[in-house]
Image (cartoon, rainbow, N blue to C red; front, side, top):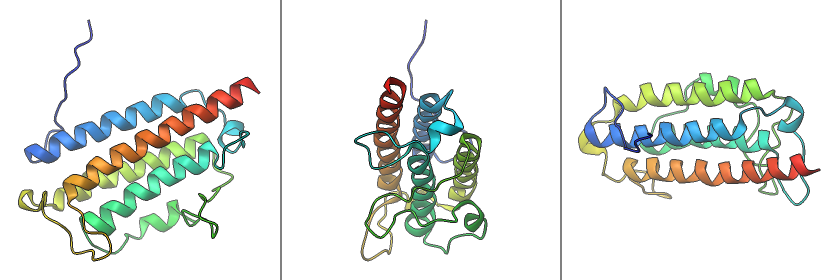
Length: 171
């Protein structure tokens, strides 16, 4: 019998530990959604969709890193990000960058690398700052809200990925 219970990631203050557990749960569901995906399917354009699965996975990882460094920690992007994100997240027209030519393994490694840095670097966040607004004038938000937003963002894109897979499978 499966027991459904929210957990806490060890090594973090209580509120953050629960939010990070939820992020990990969200990520596992995304990984389940791309399980068995072929490299050909990663860059395949499905009818009626503006993005590929690869573009969406690239976007999920980039946005997670951006929110961590720009909005939660309010620091410059670390050097390692340049290696993982050679393309802008969006093209001039506003659609996601296709980020072509990456295998599914590369996309999964990018997601894992970003999450690994996220889990290490967010330990800099003091507990008393978790519910305080950042100093980003154009986008004031609390770290608590950012973590909520990242889960929602990934979940919505996971739905797109699943829809794209359904269309590709029926073609």
